[in-house]
Image 1 (cartoon, one colour):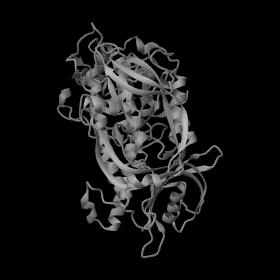
Image 2 (cartoon, one colour):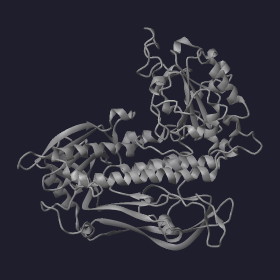
Image 3 (tube, helix red, strand yellow):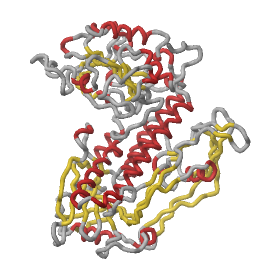
Image 4 (tube, helix red, strand yellow):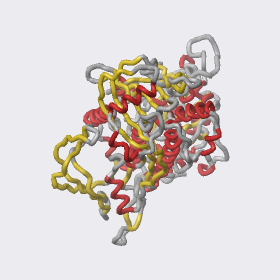
Length: 629
């Protein structure tokens, strides 16, 4: 079964480059290319360093098909009415829904189609464990939280600039039409071109984000909110021609069109904390959540909206999964969702305020000092800001502060100082290559355990030299096999074993080898133990790690990552230890990685107590299991 992203990649339009255009020097009319850059900086180590253009409807369709493959269905069309929290210990949230009728099509004042659905009056009441409002910028779930629970959808800024989004098919002599292109004209505003997928006829679509309050050659004094309903797609197409002069754009068709002012808003709470209800009884916390545009709204130009929303959903899902599998403490783990994702949402809003203003030819209100920059310096700053967007769209640039999941400061774990400066807890794990020993296949280590696995933690045990670290490795194994270990204490409930392969939908390739005697069997599939040996794959055997118990199911040779030692001319000897060196763990260590791929903690091979303290901070053992060290 292919990952869901495979379908998206095949249909979408990849863009590996961004270009920046500005007015021609002097007083002559027209634009000229100023700079070309790679879509994602090489330093980010993105496997496919491109931006994919694909309409939201196709992406939603892909998720729906994937859900159906796993026996899940979306029930439509029902409208959220309200929710209440009750004293029910199992299903504390009661949600009222109303059934809706069919779609009714009308046209707005500009003649563009508009769609609405009318309620039928039929109500349904659902009792549930959790309610997640991922219902967009006008979220009724959020509005109910605002009216009844003190949540505020705060305005964080507004750029009084009107923009249009137009999906169209064109014939043009503009050379960067199939690249991401940011264009600033001298007096007609700005244009942002984004390659999109082909339509049903096989014609290539482009998305044009167009500044339309410069249609007369100077900024309109009319409010963007007042003007948005008077703009037509023909007016936008004319604006594109003016901005892109001297290049010609002939429009062959329009797939979609909308017009919008730019504003930034952020909700004050991503989840409702514990509280006292109106009846004086305690109200359970972290049962009602918000995700995506229900939490944050901003300009759509940089593609960060839906990408950030998907990461919101991922961040919430792995937490709920661990709680529902009986592994994690409900309040402790779920409270970190608001803590981490609100901070990320604030960073996103701050970025968007700066980015939107600069794109619109304005100085960000939060950074008046930028007005002192020269035109050339401001253009360079805009390039840097746009490239910073890659961190939000991929999640690779997002960093979380220290909490029960992240320990940059290792003191709470009982360690006097960080084990390495190369890996940062709270940040994405650096990608690295190694050789999967059982098949001698070079693999990107971050892909060895997919998110469709049980949703547990990965522990990368960098063994260093097997002989030199024998005592430390034997001690680690003895601890992992003892009843005091997290491997033994934190066991999932029966829900984890209802799938075709126990806790897995599909057995992972690294474990699907047919090898017996523990060489393809995990002790606890919620803690994937990956052993990376600092040696050529041709210079050790499985029997050399057979005594390492829970570490022998997933064995790798660190002999393909660049930057290692060249110890000879034989195959496998060209770059030994590159992953150890990249992670700053040349003598060995353990990297604890969260289910979402972020580093939680880095400890030494002998720091057993630190690992236990880490997991004891938010996991919980089954009744009757041994207490920690």
